[in-house]
Each structure stands twice: as structure tokens, then as C-alpha cells.
Image (cartoon, rainbow, N blue to C red; front, top):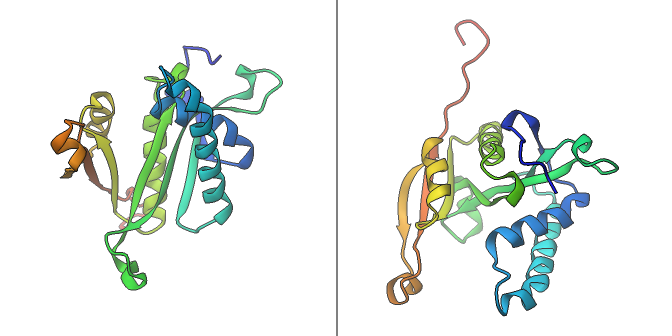
Length: 199
């Protein structure tokens, strides 16, 4: 179990490696899927599917894909490698399906999740800020992500970091079944000031 007293400065952000897969699959499954009722029976299958999805993306080694982890130092968990406390993925997306639409691509964040013992301690914020610096290094100044309209805690974090509503994605589920809509958020990134005088 991860101690409750971690602070943002005590998380280290790095690229995920294959040895992180089991922990990341558990974090994501726990964050996005309930274990209540019949879901408890299918939870291991969902977790395995998440594991395989991340493993496939990691092994493809696309130049514009990254999976990041926020880690807690190994000293917190003796006899273990640094412990993943959270994760996020970033890759390029396009509004158009055809191959020559590369000029319309943009960085998109997905699967931001934090271990339940490490929430509200700054890991998600650090992961998002690291993604912003990577997106700028890739040559992009716009970053997008989706959030459910009823996820007030996540929306609050995104708005504090400068994300704004780009559009609301309606669906038959939201219209007919009252399910929460997905909100596409956007942030215009600012390059850090140059250290060179006059630059």
C-alpha cells in the first residue's frame, strides 16, 4: 500500500516500460471499471485487455506516442522497483481518416489515472504538465483530451491548468439514456521563455 503522505514533489515522471504493465493495468482497471456485482466476475478480463492494449502500444514504438508513469521512489516500497502511482498516454490523432491528413494531426491525452492511494497529491498534475512539455517538443501548441461531464474532480483539475471546452460530444446514450456526455477540452500551449537574451 502506498503511504498517504506523498506530495507532488516526491513523484517522478518517466516513460513507461514493460515492467510497469501489470501495475498500470491495475490502476486503469480500478479507475475506470467497477468491481461491484457481476462486474467483479469480468474485472480480471477487463484488466487483461487493458494490459494487452498498453503492451501493444508500447511495442509499436511510434515516434509520437508516449505512455508516462508517475512513480513513487523504491525506498517507499522496499525490495521493489519504483512504484507506479499514476499514468497517462499521449498520441497524435486526426479528424480525418485518410493517410495524407498528417497536417491535421494533434496531440491527444488519454487514460489519465492515479492509484487510489495517491489521489489528490499532485501526480495527475505532474503527468499533465509533462505531456505539455513533450507536445511542445514534438512541435505542437495545442493539446486535447476528453472528460465526462459528471467527472467534476477531473474537470476542476483541467480547468485550473488552463483547459477549456472545445465541444460537447453528444451520443445516443446521452440523449436517450441520460448518460453523461463526453466533453472535448483544449489547451493552447505556451512555449517556455528562451534562456537566450533577445530569444
